[in-house]
Length: 275
Ligand code: HPA
Image (cartoon, rainbow, N blue to C red):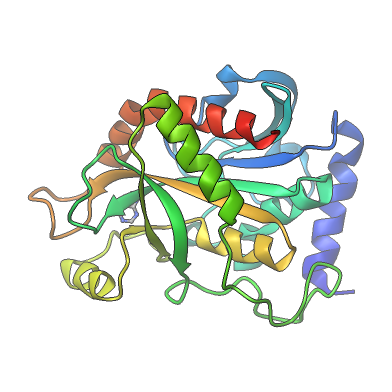
């Protein structure tokens, strides 16, 4: 059997009896949203360490567990902490958690992240609904023998971010009086931040925000036929667009500041998904 698939099935075997319900929505918590579970009615937590072979993040501020609970009446599995390609994991491990949540039953994947703003109308603290992505600067997670059990060899990527969910996001933001921008997100590998020249290049390519996650997960989830949506919290202006050097601490501080608003937006969106 395909080794990537075999590993995925092993992980599923080691969690399946501990799952309290079949989740409807899989939520990936980006920087700043880590304590989102405080707003949920939690049923079960599964530490990543307890899952055989599961990739565990090494980044401070990216603690790792699955949290199963309710947002309103919606059954959610949320990932507190994700692994990033820059930590040295093979790309198949980076997308393993998204695939695992699909095996658990989740049909919708809600991705969140922190990003650097490239669009000159953006400022730190803005939220951007991801309308499309640029993946060509990150490794494609579907390279290698295709896992036919998950999806087709050459999946279409014309509509990765679900139209209906985009409308739900916009309606929810409007209802709460939260401004939400829209744009194209590019994933680079990191861990270094981009150079100003790279940001100029991305700007010319039409990219609005840049980060080190999300796109590979979206590709793997789209391959499996999940409905996908994503929101990025713009935590800084990208390199060359701001006077100061970029730091992880600055990104985390900005994400933390935006967190209360981000949380209420995420809650409203998930509650609206059941309608
Ligand atoms: N670049 C890449 N990733 C990021 C940034 C950035 O400027 N800000 C937050 N994550």
